[in-house]
Length: 305
Length: 305
Image (cartoon, rainbow over all chains, first blue to last red; front, side, top):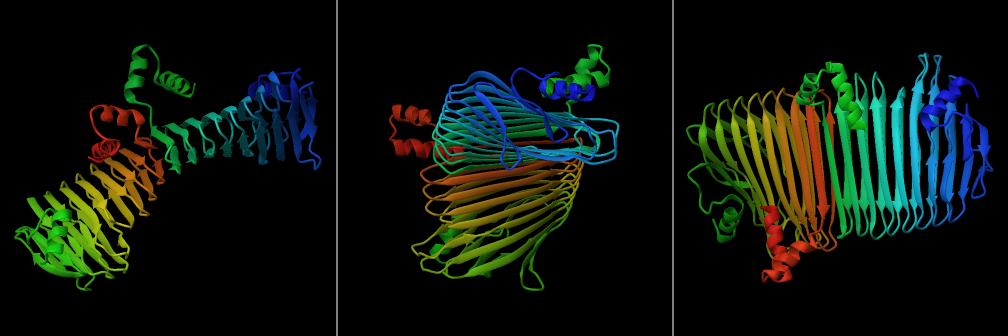
């Protein structure tokens, strides 16, 4: 692996070498390193469209890395990764995608990740997106995440778009059985003329199912963001959606939650707040000796933490 | 005026006779009583589609009544009422529509009310909707309210759907100039197989403009409600939208706010909460000696106050 790949792996997946964990490292549209373990099998799909990750029932405290790096300008990469997670598991999956683009060509990664999560299993899933390079070609990352949560299972999903992604269209769909829980936290930062769209579609089908969707974003300069979130409460359930955005400069942010109670025991709450950094906060930090820029930086990093 | 008309006027407009105020009472699709005053002229539109209400600049503390009653089953009534309110006014407008339907025919009133509100004027606007009668014909009321708020003006709009309206599709559109304020409070109760849709479309175009949209609703039995609210912050402005709904029995409620900040000094907040009456509240009132039904009644009437 060259240094560009190593640096990106470090940024998006906290690894710099091939890890000892179950993993698949995809570089420029091809698998560059792969390892299965006793409990976690990673294998190509028969039709060649991606990989299947099969986790044995009862697998606990194991880590899976499936990062993607593109360093050749002009690659448009589409991959299907399907996770089959048995009952009673407790695993940690680190995905993430980085693009290094030094040329003029549009470079794109669309990862379609489907999770079949078994009964009483617990999955923590972290996904980081990042772009860099001196080229003028656009960096595009369009992740699709489909989550099927069986009875009593939990998915905790953190997704972070760090910087350098010109356009992203993110779709997360989930259906929840009885006693299942979905917790997602999304952090998005855009600048320049970047565009970010994010779309959650949650079906709370199970009795005592619950979803908590939190989005925090900062839109700088001329960037645009749109947040959509559909939560349907179809049983006794709890749904909460929260979208907080800071706008700066000429940026625009749109928030469109869509909550529907189809059951008398569905309890659904949405909150959204969009605005600029409060002047008082900046003044307070300036009296502590910071410049205006340092104060803004401090407030934003606190907000996105 | 017969007793049916008198009773409905009392319910929707707090009058039982022809009032001394500027007014137009429309019964079964025709003007039954009208009065202009020195400052407020009410006249037919030339094309016969409705009335113009012209308020002289500087008119203060005057009341206008424009209620509508339909007591003949099968009437489908469409009327355009345009308000031209001069600068520096302070007036109170009471609209309202009641249908008494004793037969099998669909009976409908669609009132399209357009307000041109002059600089620094203040308008309070109350609209009540109500249906009654022993017939099986549907009662439909589809109000459209279009509000143009000039610099420094204020519109405070209260709309209440009391009961007996089988279907309603309510659209409220507003555009606000500098320093203009819109405050709306909507209360909707549905039961049986009733359907209520409400749709706000607010353009905060002016510097220091503000909108506060509050909707409180109760959906009982098999009724369905949908709340949509678009707020676009196009300048330094404040927008707040709040939708609280109680569901009972097999009712469903959908809330879809849509807030967009197109300006760095736009501050927009949305809140929505949908759920049933909390069990603890009922238990508390039962320990005070109420039956379960009385406790529910008490909680709902407090919620809708």
